[in-house]
Length: 241
Image (cartoon, rainbow, N blue to C red; front, side):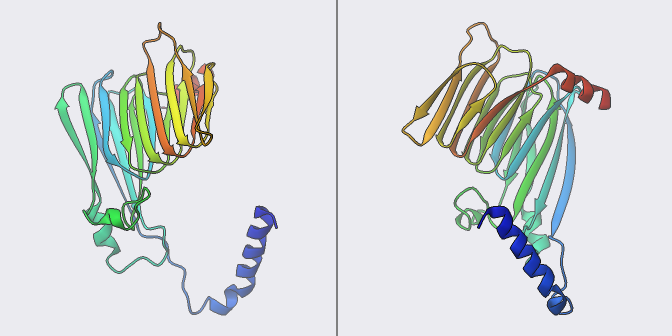
């Protein structure tokens, strides 16, 4: 049975039995909270992510500030009674070690790691949505989850223990790229050299000594995708900002 057919069968079963349980089991929305913070930050600086986990989205824009939106939620519809307390325990912090450096961190209860040792940090799921100056340099050391980076023209260093990294690079280059996945695939629109690592991992390099833009990507378990964004797409985005 195919995946789509299996999903269709499950959906029909749920629809067919829903009236039997509608009166006994009310549908609840997942518990979640959302907070947004803006920090002034000059273009060309370095933004570091410390102890991040979950899904991380970073988008470049033409403003001299960083906008951080943190979404915390329970995927389980039957959240515990202390859901609000558990959500409150997960927080993000910002610090300025220097005028050209911003550190964004995440605090979690110390015992949560043992609940989900493969990337999660306890029962709470986290999603970061950031907009940063377009020419910022990024240094990301991610504990697990997806990373999506778009429209950044500075240097990028991103490591992820498990999950996928998707990088949308504005054209034209050139770029100096060093990307490797220990257990997963590496796909790139940029011309370069692909190579297999120990039969279960893949790497990609595109070395240009004349390029000031350095990109370093590492994933333990997951894939890496590098795409080029056409200039007209960036123009449309600038008009709508």
